[in-house]
Image (tube, rainbow, N blue to C red; front, side, top):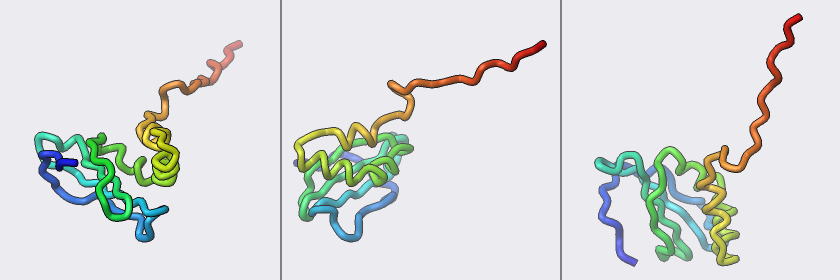
Length: 103
């Protein structure tokens, strides 16, 4: 797998400290012209498994759903990545309050 041609500003996070079933992650903020994106790298037993761009404002979803990502990798499924990428609104049912009653 070749490295993406990106310029890293700083590492946002990496871990977990103890690999989850051999898997770890590193997310890095990028410099211009990609400052709205982050580089996410998934490792298995220290070897780069996946490398992709992800919206920088959502990279903490990768950390929050890392266990789901690992479950998906083991099951050969993208479900963990889909959970991390979900916008929180798509497919959701939004219930608005009733307008106040005037008498």
